[in-house]
Image (tube, rainbow, N blue to C red; front, side, top):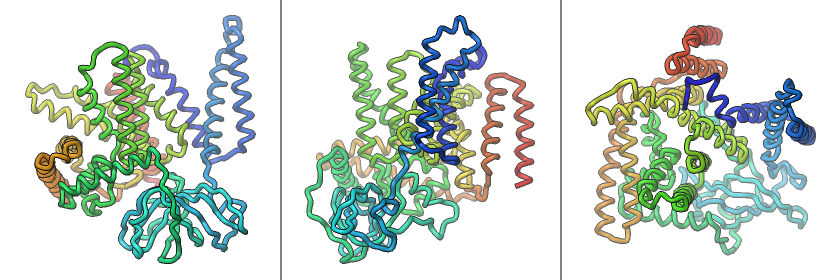
Length: 537
């Protein structure tokens, strides 16, 4: 990365990092202080005109005005980010002109997934397509949650089914039992604001032929894979974990088991994210490494890997975390194919920039923040930490390499975890050393099971081995979570402290790894300021 050469080498070699700052500032400021779209469009157009004018003028004669072009780019990105917030702004059904509060207009909705069983009802995500008023249909486009009563059994309905009902939508509220998790904000980030509970005889199914689409094909394949897993792993703790690891289906997971994984610091292996895609990418690269070194074969290999990653993302339910990880891997793989030597931070900034262009509200998503913090932390700290110890024994060296990766990932993710979840898993290192390789083996075994399920004896053998591995992993995680002091709870960080925490990490990184001693005093002074803020809070 050439960390130590030249003045601000990363700043010069990573143009997307420079462009990312005004773009992020635009999103944050527009969220706090919104401005009319027309005014933003005028500013954006004027900045583009200024930029074009600057490119047409030779600065060899007017060298003092070189900064004008840079300013024009920053203003254009700043205003573009604010315009994107308006483009992605939701229009809810209760905000449309045809909606009258207190009147239950007939709503025609399409189910976006299969109903999932909860404790007292069945839950399903749906989309409002039409609202009927005075014999006129008005086109709508809002995602809502529907809670069906258990009678009649709503599992007879599938994704794509159309139902009609006449009942007023209710706003989504936070859980009364939890004060930490902002469920309302979580749903709003996913463009879902309303919910409705439908009892028997309060809705009607409209006979329709389900549209065949890419999502429906992958959903059908997903259902077949779930059937295979339940067939060869009849034990619920076994198949529920394999379902989560393989296709991201977490509805069968026991809440107590989920809590054990969270308390042990290994909840990331259950939620499909960059870890799973990285493993699949690695397996594909190994399988395709002997396909040839010609330019044409390299592009064929790249296309196969990227299409496989996106196919797996759709198969696992296309959750925002998976889509973000797939997008990030796509950009990194393209960058490595086009450029021999890439600046990873520049590629990371480029992927974040493009993903936020697609959905600017992801910047508030905890998963988005944690995933990028983890990747950046690994790129900055894994090698320096690994180089601290040089072990000759191959087994001890492998253990230390795995430990250094887990430690490196925690450096930038821990402040965010404390800020949002107010706790820290004490034994995360021990748990990750065993859970990550075991979960990777289980994922590979699950792929083999689904591939050879048509051979019953072989499928039965793979299922039996998977059951042993999963039961061992669950037992190990449960044991770790019950150790004394496994979770340090009631930790708090305010937003100023969080920002200062990251500045302290930056200062000591510059001092320890880049040998810039002036940052030592800055870091120590920042620690004092951090303590003072804590005293006042």
